[in-house]
Length: 109
Image (cartoon, rainbow, N blue to C red; front, side, top):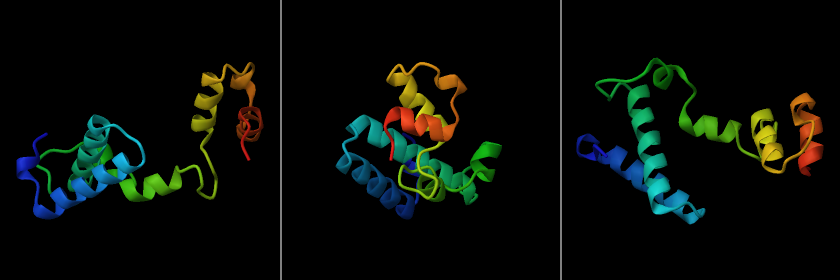
């Protein structure tokens, strides 16, 4: 990772995210990758990166997005999350189901 060009603040942010992911059971490699991607996106959003994609600058922030798409947020799991879970469980007819039907089918609350 090109972390040599990160500020002290971004380095602390990287370590904090990485440790949190490891505490939640992610592997070292996965935690490092997610933390680096998150920090790089935040750098792009704040104009600290030399190059960045349009989506990196215009998408909602990583912290807000995580809260909106969490399993416990106001809307619960997204349709896509429920669909993927149904796919993993081999639930038949999932492509014709709406969000509430998927929730019932996968055994959601």
